[in-house]
Amino acid sequence: MLRKVRVEDSVGTVLAHDLTKIVPGEFKGRRFKKGHIIQPEDIPELLQMGKEHLYVLTLGPDEVHEDEAAIRLARAAAGDGDHGLKFSEPQEGKVNLIAARNGLLKVNLPALQQVNEGAEIVLATLHNNYPVTAGQVVAGTRLIPLLAPRAVIERVEAICRQAGGIVRIAPYRRLRVGLITTGSEVYKGRVKDAFGPVVRAKIASYGSEVEREEIVPDDAEAIRRAIAAMLTAGMEMVVLTGGMSVDPDDVTPEGIRRSGAEVVTYGAPVLPGAMFMLAYLGEVPVMGLPGCVMYYRATIFDLVLPRVLTGERLQRKDIAGLAAGGLCQGCPECRYPACSFGKG
Image 1 (cartoon, one colour):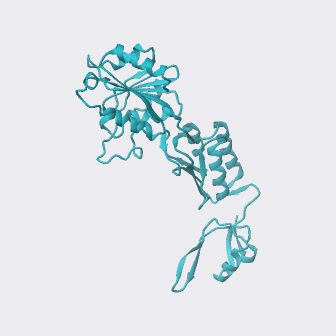
Image 2 (tube, rainbow, N blue to C red):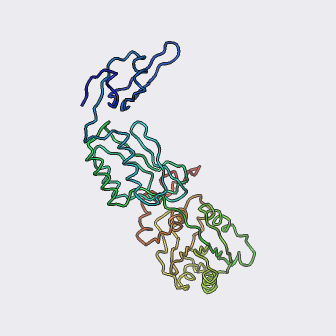
Image 3 (cartoon, helix red, strand yellow):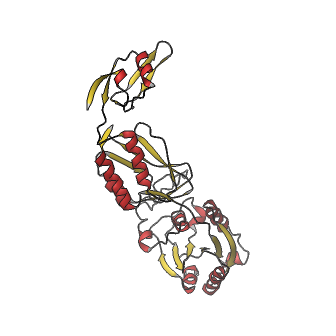
């Protein structure tokens, strides 16, 4: 309810408009913002500014102020448990959710949709499966009006509880990685391997390490034996480079199949990265990488690797879901992940 009150009687009320302070020759600007809750220490300043009356909103017993609402919404969106998030102080009714660690942003999209179907609430996030770093703002929430019925906030809190939270940062696991480079030309020393350094750098950027490497010729049986040796050595992920096309002498996919791995997909609706293979030997992910990974800044490998490193076991439908947004625009200066690539 909007009403006019004496400044001396305004403590605890909500300011309904901005107040400008003017000091001739020194300062002119907003001193108190709309939505500010008047505090006892504000009274002398308001009187000094020449204010004798204010237009204020009075909080009813069933109403929530925008700052309190934003805090409650942010905490509800994060849910309980280890969500990997911290929160900014409320500012003009907005609270940011900030990554407290490196990891992959996971967003419950149906619950996010349900929250934003209400007219009074806003919760905006980065894309689902967005790789983020500690300190990065990943979401923001606010109340649209200055005040809202308590029931509105409680409705959103209930949605978040039922969903187990809407936003979290999934941490990367530190895996022991085996790297198998295929290609008779590399095996025989005719060509220097340029693929391995790229793959090692990408894996290291997520906190894991290539602990074992082997170079094998274009021979399916040799590839099978190399994969088996990696598992015997305790590798927790196996990555194979080269030999992924449908040419007769490219036999890496056949070698992966011979290993007994369960193939999730050979081929992905992602460009660059169409000739990608993902398989599992028990719990160990096995990835066959096409040559584009060596030449392009962002490929299918960048979309799949962080999800695998969080412990997610991908299925065919997950790979198919990359189609919308799976076309890289080949920008002169790559800005991935701050672009549309992989963001369906």
